[in-house]
Length: 428
Image (tube, rainbow, N blue to C red):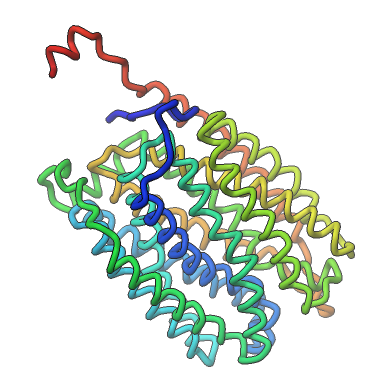
Protein backbone atom coordinates (compact mmCIF):
# COMPACT_ATOMS: atom_id res chain seq x y z
CA UNK A 1 0.00 0.00 0.00
CA UNK A 2 1.37 3.40 -0.91
CA UNK A 3 0.43 7.02 -0.75
CA UNK A 4 0.83 9.36 -3.68
CA UNK A 5 1.70 12.40 -1.59
CA UNK A 6 2.52 13.19 1.99
CA UNK A 7 -0.03 14.25 4.56
CA UNK A 8 1.58 17.65 4.86
CA UNK A 9 1.71 20.61 2.52
CA UNK A 10 0.41 20.48 -0.99
CA UNK A 11 2.98 20.34 -3.75
CA UNK A 12 3.44 23.37 -5.97
CA UNK A 13 1.71 21.56 -8.81
CA UNK A 14 -1.55 21.42 -6.92
CA UNK A 15 -3.57 23.92 -8.91
CA UNK A 16 -7.19 24.90 -9.45
CA UNK A 17 -9.86 22.27 -9.92
CA UNK A 18 -11.27 21.50 -13.35
CA UNK A 19 -14.85 22.40 -14.15
CA UNK A 20 -15.99 18.82 -13.63
CA UNK A 21 -14.11 18.52 -10.32
CA UNK A 22 -15.78 21.72 -9.16
CA UNK A 23 -19.17 20.25 -10.06
CA UNK A 24 -18.41 17.06 -8.12
CA UNK A 25 -17.36 19.03 -5.04
CA UNK A 26 -20.47 21.21 -5.28
CA UNK A 27 -22.95 18.37 -5.75
CA UNK A 28 -21.38 16.30 -2.97
CA UNK A 29 -21.53 19.34 -0.71
CA UNK A 30 -25.25 19.78 -1.43
CA UNK A 31 -25.78 16.06 -0.88
CA UNK A 32 -23.94 16.26 2.42
CA UNK A 33 -26.09 19.27 3.32
CA UNK A 34 -29.27 17.19 3.08
CA UNK A 35 -27.75 14.25 4.97
CA UNK A 36 -26.39 16.45 7.76
CA UNK A 37 -29.55 18.54 8.01
CA UNK A 38 -31.68 15.41 8.29
CA UNK A 39 -29.52 14.16 11.15
CA UNK A 40 -28.93 17.49 12.91
CA UNK A 41 -32.57 18.50 12.68
CA UNK A 42 -33.72 16.43 15.64
CA UNK A 43 -31.31 18.14 18.04
CA UNK A 44 -32.75 21.69 17.73
CA UNK A 45 -36.24 20.21 17.41
CA UNK A 46 -35.76 18.35 20.68
CA UNK A 47 -37.42 21.13 22.66
CA UNK A 48 -40.53 20.62 20.47
CA UNK A 49 -40.43 16.85 19.86
CA UNK A 50 -40.06 15.81 23.52
CA UNK A 51 -43.25 17.53 24.78
CA UNK A 52 -45.23 16.88 21.58
CA UNK A 53 -44.64 13.13 21.59
CA UNK A 54 -44.53 13.04 25.39
CA UNK A 55 -41.18 11.27 25.60
CA UNK A 56 -38.30 11.41 28.08
CA UNK A 57 -34.70 12.56 27.41
CA UNK A 58 -33.55 8.93 27.40
CA UNK A 59 -36.20 8.05 24.80
CA UNK A 60 -35.13 11.02 22.71
CA UNK A 61 -31.53 9.82 22.93
CA UNK A 62 -32.75 6.41 21.73
CA UNK A 63 -34.43 7.99 18.69
CA UNK A 64 -31.13 9.64 17.78
CA UNK A 65 -29.14 6.46 18.39
CA UNK A 66 -31.54 4.33 16.33
CA UNK A 67 -30.54 6.31 13.26
CA UNK A 68 -26.88 5.79 14.12
CA UNK A 69 -27.19 2.06 14.80
CA UNK A 70 -29.07 1.53 11.54
CA UNK A 71 -26.41 3.43 9.61
CA UNK A 72 -23.75 1.37 11.32
CA UNK A 73 -25.42 -1.91 10.43
CA UNK A 74 -25.84 -0.85 6.80
CA UNK A 75 -22.15 0.07 6.59
CA UNK A 76 -21.08 -3.38 7.76
CA UNK A 77 -23.53 -5.19 5.47
CA UNK A 78 -22.39 -3.30 2.37
CA UNK A 79 -18.65 -3.18 3.11
CA UNK A 80 -17.86 -6.40 1.25
CA UNK A 81 -19.67 -5.16 -1.88
CA UNK A 82 -18.63 -1.49 -1.78
CA UNK A 83 -15.68 -1.91 -4.15
CA UNK A 84 -17.44 -4.17 -6.66
CA UNK A 85 -19.72 -1.59 -8.31
CA UNK A 86 -19.64 1.81 -9.95
CA UNK A 87 -19.71 4.25 -7.01
CA UNK A 88 -22.11 6.57 -8.84
CA UNK A 89 -24.74 3.82 -9.13
CA UNK A 90 -24.37 2.94 -5.46
CA UNK A 91 -24.63 6.60 -4.51
CA UNK A 92 -27.88 7.12 -6.43
CA UNK A 93 -29.46 3.91 -5.08
CA UNK A 94 -28.76 4.64 -1.43
CA UNK A 95 -29.60 8.33 -1.74
CA UNK A 96 -33.06 7.45 -3.08
CA UNK A 97 -33.50 5.18 -0.06
CA UNK A 98 -32.44 8.00 2.23
CA UNK A 99 -35.05 10.32 0.74
CA UNK A 100 -37.73 7.64 1.18
CA UNK A 101 -36.81 7.31 4.86
CA UNK A 102 -36.90 11.08 5.30
CA UNK A 103 -40.37 11.15 3.79
CA UNK A 104 -41.46 8.60 6.40
CA UNK A 105 -40.17 10.98 9.10
CA UNK A 106 -42.33 13.71 7.61
CA UNK A 107 -45.50 11.67 8.02
CA UNK A 108 -44.58 10.23 11.44
CA UNK A 109 -47.29 10.81 14.06
CA UNK A 110 -46.03 8.87 17.07
CA UNK A 111 -42.87 7.96 18.94
CA UNK A 112 -42.67 4.41 17.55
CA UNK A 113 -43.44 5.56 14.02
CA UNK A 114 -40.66 8.14 14.24
CA UNK A 115 -38.32 5.46 15.59
CA UNK A 116 -39.05 3.24 12.57
CA UNK A 117 -38.64 6.15 10.14
CA UNK A 118 -35.26 7.08 11.63
CA UNK A 119 -34.21 3.44 11.33
CA UNK A 120 -35.00 3.37 7.61
CA UNK A 121 -33.30 6.72 7.02
CA UNK A 122 -30.18 5.62 8.85
CA UNK A 123 -29.90 2.38 6.86
CA UNK A 124 -29.37 4.37 3.67
CA UNK A 125 -27.78 7.61 4.95
CA UNK A 126 -24.77 5.90 6.53
CA UNK A 127 -23.79 4.27 3.24
CA UNK A 128 -24.26 7.52 1.28
CA UNK A 129 -21.64 9.25 3.42
CA UNK A 130 -19.05 6.50 2.95
CA UNK A 131 -19.60 6.38 -0.82
CA UNK A 132 -19.14 10.15 -1.04
CA UNK A 133 -15.81 9.95 0.79
CA UNK A 134 -14.67 7.11 -1.47
CA UNK A 135 -15.52 9.22 -4.53
CA UNK A 136 -13.48 12.13 -3.16
CA UNK A 137 -10.54 9.81 -2.52
CA UNK A 138 -10.80 8.39 -6.05
CA UNK A 139 -11.00 11.73 -7.84
CA UNK A 140 -8.70 14.02 -5.81
CA UNK A 141 -5.04 13.59 -4.75
CA UNK A 142 -4.19 13.69 -1.05
CA UNK A 143 -2.48 17.07 -1.42
CA UNK A 144 -5.81 18.75 -2.28
CA UNK A 145 -8.24 16.71 -0.17
CA UNK A 146 -8.10 19.21 2.66
CA UNK A 147 -9.59 21.85 0.35
CA UNK A 148 -12.24 19.40 -0.85
CA UNK A 149 -13.16 18.28 2.66
CA UNK A 150 -13.22 21.90 3.79
CA UNK A 151 -15.88 22.72 1.20
CA UNK A 152 -17.91 19.55 1.68
CA UNK A 153 -17.84 19.78 5.47
CA UNK A 154 -19.26 23.31 5.32
CA UNK A 155 -22.53 21.44 4.84
CA UNK A 156 -22.62 21.36 8.64
CA UNK A 157 -22.40 25.14 8.76
CA UNK A 158 -24.85 25.58 5.91
CA UNK A 159 -27.29 23.41 7.83
CA UNK A 160 -26.96 25.81 10.75
CA UNK A 161 -27.20 29.02 8.71
CA UNK A 162 -29.84 28.04 6.18
CA UNK A 163 -31.34 24.65 6.91
CA UNK A 164 -32.01 24.69 10.64
CA UNK A 165 -33.43 28.24 10.87
CA UNK A 166 -35.75 27.57 7.92
CA UNK A 167 -36.65 24.18 9.39
CA UNK A 168 -37.42 25.71 12.77
CA UNK A 169 -39.57 28.33 11.10
CA UNK A 170 -41.47 25.64 9.21
CA UNK A 171 -41.88 23.61 12.40
CA UNK A 172 -43.51 26.53 14.20
CA UNK A 173 -46.07 26.89 11.41
CA UNK A 174 -46.60 23.38 10.10
CA UNK A 175 -45.57 21.12 12.97
CA UNK A 176 -42.21 19.68 14.03
CA UNK A 177 -42.16 17.15 11.17
CA UNK A 178 -42.76 19.69 8.36
CA UNK A 179 -39.00 20.34 7.78
CA UNK A 180 -38.52 16.76 6.61
CA UNK A 181 -40.65 17.50 3.55
CA UNK A 182 -38.29 20.36 2.75
CA UNK A 183 -35.32 17.97 2.84
CA UNK A 184 -37.08 15.59 0.45
CA UNK A 185 -37.68 18.45 -2.00
CA UNK A 186 -34.08 19.68 -1.96
CA UNK A 187 -32.73 16.12 -2.04
CA UNK A 188 -34.76 15.27 -5.13
CA UNK A 189 -33.03 18.08 -7.05
CA UNK A 190 -29.61 16.95 -5.83
CA UNK A 191 -30.28 13.34 -6.80
CA UNK A 192 -31.41 14.40 -10.27
CA UNK A 193 -28.18 16.39 -10.78
CA UNK A 194 -26.05 13.41 -9.74
CA UNK A 195 -27.90 11.02 -12.02
CA UNK A 196 -27.76 13.39 -14.98
CA UNK A 197 -24.31 14.95 -14.86
CA UNK A 198 -21.96 12.82 -12.74
CA UNK A 199 -19.76 10.46 -14.72
CA UNK A 200 -19.28 6.82 -13.71
CA UNK A 201 -16.75 6.35 -10.90
CA UNK A 202 -15.40 2.89 -11.67
CA UNK A 203 -11.63 3.22 -11.97
CA UNK A 204 -11.26 1.24 -8.73
CA UNK A 205 -12.75 -1.81 -10.46
CA UNK A 206 -9.49 -2.24 -12.37
CA UNK A 207 -7.61 -2.69 -9.08
CA UNK A 208 -10.19 -4.84 -7.32
CA UNK A 209 -8.89 -8.38 -6.73
CA UNK A 210 -11.08 -11.37 -7.53
CA UNK A 211 -12.23 -12.34 -4.05
CA UNK A 212 -15.57 -12.93 -2.38
CA UNK A 213 -17.32 -10.09 -0.52
CA UNK A 214 -16.84 -11.92 2.78
CA UNK A 215 -13.13 -12.40 2.12
CA UNK A 216 -12.82 -8.73 1.17
CA UNK A 217 -14.56 -7.70 4.40
CA UNK A 218 -12.46 -9.98 6.60
CA UNK A 219 -9.22 -8.86 4.98
CA UNK A 220 -10.15 -5.22 5.53
CA UNK A 221 -11.05 -5.60 9.20
CA UNK A 222 -7.90 -7.67 9.89
CA UNK A 223 -5.48 -5.03 8.59
CA UNK A 224 -3.68 -3.61 11.64
CA UNK A 225 -3.21 -0.17 10.11
CA UNK A 226 -6.87 0.00 9.17
CA UNK A 227 -7.80 -0.94 12.73
CA UNK A 228 -5.96 2.15 14.01
CA UNK A 229 -8.02 4.27 11.68
CA UNK A 230 -11.26 2.60 12.76
CA UNK A 231 -10.48 3.16 16.45
CA UNK A 232 -9.67 6.84 15.87
CA UNK A 233 -12.86 7.40 13.88
CA UNK A 234 -14.95 5.79 16.60
CA UNK A 235 -13.46 7.94 19.35
CA UNK A 236 -13.94 11.12 17.32
CA UNK A 237 -17.62 10.27 16.93
CA UNK A 238 -18.26 9.62 20.60
CA UNK A 239 -17.76 13.20 21.77
CA UNK A 240 -19.88 14.89 19.12
CA UNK A 241 -22.84 12.56 19.56
CA UNK A 242 -22.79 13.00 23.33
CA UNK A 243 -23.36 16.75 23.25
CA UNK A 244 -25.41 17.21 20.07
CA UNK A 245 -28.80 15.76 21.10
CA UNK A 246 -29.08 17.93 24.21
CA UNK A 247 -27.46 21.21 23.19
CA UNK A 248 -30.70 23.00 22.36
CA UNK A 249 -32.38 21.80 25.57
CA UNK A 250 -29.32 22.90 27.57
CA UNK A 251 -29.29 26.35 25.97
CA UNK A 252 -33.01 26.90 26.58
CA UNK A 253 -33.35 25.58 30.13
CA UNK A 254 -29.88 26.17 31.62
CA UNK A 255 -28.62 29.27 29.79
CA UNK A 256 -31.96 31.04 29.71
CA UNK A 257 -32.09 31.32 25.91
CA UNK A 258 -35.59 31.96 24.59
CA UNK A 259 -36.67 29.18 22.27
CA UNK A 260 -37.52 31.67 19.54
CA UNK A 261 -33.85 32.77 19.55
CA UNK A 262 -32.51 29.31 18.75
CA UNK A 263 -32.58 29.99 14.98
CA UNK A 264 -30.57 33.19 15.52
CA UNK A 265 -27.87 31.30 17.45
CA UNK A 266 -27.56 28.69 14.72
CA UNK A 267 -27.46 31.37 12.01
CA UNK A 268 -24.72 33.42 13.69
CA UNK A 269 -22.48 30.50 14.58
CA UNK A 270 -23.11 28.77 11.25
CA UNK A 271 -22.16 31.89 9.29
CA UNK A 272 -18.74 31.89 10.93
CA UNK A 273 -18.38 28.18 10.18
CA UNK A 274 -19.15 28.68 6.48
CA UNK A 275 -16.21 31.09 6.30
CA UNK A 276 -13.87 29.05 8.48
CA UNK A 277 -14.52 25.63 6.87
CA UNK A 278 -12.76 26.26 3.52
CA UNK A 279 -9.98 28.18 5.31
CA UNK A 280 -9.37 25.23 7.63
CA UNK A 281 -9.29 22.92 4.62
CA UNK A 282 -6.66 25.04 2.89
CA UNK A 283 -4.66 25.29 6.10
CA UNK A 284 -4.60 21.50 6.46
CA UNK A 285 -3.09 21.22 2.97
CA UNK A 286 -0.63 24.05 3.60
CA UNK A 287 0.70 23.45 7.13
CA UNK A 288 -0.06 19.74 7.59
CA UNK A 289 -3.24 17.86 8.33
CA UNK A 290 -2.08 16.52 11.69
CA UNK A 291 -0.98 20.00 12.82
CA UNK A 292 -4.47 21.35 12.14
CA UNK A 293 -6.00 18.31 13.84
CA UNK A 294 -3.89 18.88 16.98
CA UNK A 295 -4.93 22.54 17.01
CA UNK A 296 -8.58 21.54 16.73
CA UNK A 297 -8.26 19.07 19.60
CA UNK A 298 -6.75 21.72 21.88
CA UNK A 299 -9.45 24.29 21.09
CA UNK A 300 -12.22 21.70 21.43
CA UNK A 301 -11.10 20.52 24.86
CA UNK A 302 -10.89 24.05 26.25
CA UNK A 303 -14.16 25.29 24.80
CA UNK A 304 -16.23 22.21 25.63
CA UNK A 305 -15.33 22.53 29.32
CA UNK A 306 -16.34 26.19 29.22
CA UNK A 307 -19.57 25.51 27.32
CA UNK A 308 -20.80 22.67 29.53
CA UNK A 309 -20.35 24.82 32.66
CA UNK A 310 -22.25 27.88 31.41
CA UNK A 311 -25.31 29.05 33.29
CA UNK A 312 -27.56 31.99 32.40
CA UNK A 313 -25.52 33.66 29.66
CA UNK A 314 -25.91 36.75 27.44
CA UNK A 315 -26.61 35.92 23.82
CA UNK A 316 -23.34 37.39 22.50
CA UNK A 317 -21.25 35.39 24.98
CA UNK A 318 -23.08 32.19 24.05
CA UNK A 319 -22.44 32.84 20.34
CA UNK A 320 -18.72 33.50 20.90
CA UNK A 321 -18.33 30.29 22.89
CA UNK A 322 -20.16 28.17 20.31
CA UNK A 323 -18.23 29.75 17.41
CA UNK A 324 -14.90 28.89 19.05
CA UNK A 325 -16.15 25.41 19.88
CA UNK A 326 -17.16 24.87 16.25
CA UNK A 327 -13.75 26.09 15.05
CA UNK A 328 -12.17 23.36 17.15
CA UNK A 329 -14.63 20.70 15.99
CA UNK A 330 -14.32 21.69 12.32
CA UNK A 331 -10.53 21.70 12.53
CA UNK A 332 -10.63 18.13 13.83
CA UNK A 333 -13.31 16.98 11.41
CA UNK A 334 -11.87 18.40 8.19
CA UNK A 335 -8.23 17.53 8.84
CA UNK A 336 -9.12 14.04 10.11
CA UNK A 337 -11.27 13.29 7.06
CA UNK A 338 -8.49 14.36 4.70
CA UNK A 339 -5.75 12.52 6.57
CA UNK A 340 -7.73 9.30 7.08
CA UNK A 341 -8.53 9.15 3.37
CA UNK A 342 -4.88 8.19 2.84
CA UNK A 343 -5.17 5.08 5.03
CA UNK A 344 -6.82 2.53 2.67
CA UNK A 345 -5.37 1.16 -0.55
CA UNK A 346 -7.27 1.90 -3.77
CA UNK A 347 -8.78 -1.60 -3.88
CA UNK A 348 -10.08 -1.28 -0.30
CA UNK A 349 -11.42 2.28 -0.25
CA UNK A 350 -15.09 1.43 -0.50
CA UNK A 351 -14.90 -1.29 2.14
CA UNK A 352 -12.76 0.82 4.45
CA UNK A 353 -15.03 3.86 4.15
CA UNK A 354 -18.14 1.73 4.73
CA UNK A 355 -16.71 0.09 7.85
CA UNK A 356 -15.37 3.43 9.08
CA UNK A 357 -18.79 5.04 8.57
CA UNK A 358 -20.41 2.09 10.32
CA UNK A 359 -18.15 2.38 13.36
CA UNK A 360 -18.68 6.13 13.37
CA UNK A 361 -22.43 5.71 13.52
CA UNK A 362 -22.39 2.87 16.06
CA UNK A 363 -19.97 4.76 18.31
CA UNK A 364 -22.14 7.84 18.03
CA UNK A 365 -25.25 5.81 18.78
CA UNK A 366 -23.70 4.34 21.90
CA UNK A 367 -22.59 7.81 22.94
CA UNK A 368 -26.13 9.16 22.51
CA UNK A 369 -27.55 6.32 24.62
CA UNK A 370 -24.93 6.87 27.33
CA UNK A 371 -25.57 10.61 27.25
CA UNK A 372 -29.30 9.99 27.63
CA UNK A 373 -28.59 7.90 30.71
CA UNK A 374 -26.24 10.48 32.22
CA UNK A 375 -28.29 13.59 31.50
CA UNK A 376 -31.35 14.16 33.66
CA UNK A 377 -33.97 16.89 33.43
CA UNK A 378 -35.13 18.44 36.70
CA UNK A 379 -38.85 19.20 37.16
CA UNK A 380 -38.23 22.79 36.00
CA UNK A 381 -36.55 21.52 32.80
CA UNK A 382 -32.96 22.22 33.88
CA UNK A 383 -30.44 19.77 32.39
CA UNK A 384 -28.30 18.09 35.05
CA UNK A 385 -24.88 16.40 34.67
CA UNK A 386 -24.20 18.04 31.30
CA UNK A 387 -20.69 18.89 32.51
CA UNK A 388 -19.97 15.15 32.87
CA UNK A 389 -20.43 14.80 29.12
CA UNK A 390 -17.85 17.55 28.61
CA UNK A 391 -15.25 15.71 30.67
CA UNK A 392 -15.87 12.50 28.75
CA UNK A 393 -15.39 14.37 25.47
CA UNK A 394 -12.04 15.72 26.69
CA UNK A 395 -10.86 12.19 27.48
CA UNK A 396 -11.86 10.77 24.09
CA UNK A 397 -10.24 13.75 22.35
CA UNK A 398 -6.91 13.13 24.09
CA UNK A 399 -6.87 9.46 23.11
CA UNK A 400 -7.84 10.25 19.50
CA UNK A 401 -4.99 12.78 19.32
CA UNK A 402 -2.47 10.10 20.32
CA UNK A 403 -3.87 7.61 17.79
CA UNK A 404 -3.89 10.20 15.02
CA UNK A 405 -0.23 11.03 15.75
CA UNK A 406 0.76 7.42 15.01
CA UNK A 407 -1.43 7.28 11.92
CA UNK A 408 0.19 10.43 10.57
CA UNK A 409 3.67 9.01 11.21
CA UNK A 410 2.77 5.80 9.39
CA UNK A 411 1.40 7.66 6.36
CA UNK A 412 4.52 9.81 6.18
CA UNK A 413 6.61 6.65 6.32
CA UNK A 414 4.77 5.31 3.27
CA UNK A 415 5.75 8.37 1.22
CA UNK A 416 7.09 7.08 -2.12
CA UNK A 417 10.83 7.43 -2.71
CA UNK A 418 11.65 9.27 -5.97
CA UNK A 419 12.95 6.88 -8.64
CA UNK A 420 16.50 7.55 -9.93
CA UNK A 421 16.62 9.09 -13.38
CA UNK A 422 18.25 6.03 -14.99
CA UNK A 423 15.60 3.69 -13.57
CA UNK A 424 12.82 6.05 -14.59
CA UNK A 425 14.15 6.12 -18.17
CA UNK A 426 14.38 2.33 -18.23
CA UNK A 427 10.82 2.04 -16.89
CA UNK A 428 9.58 4.30 -19.67
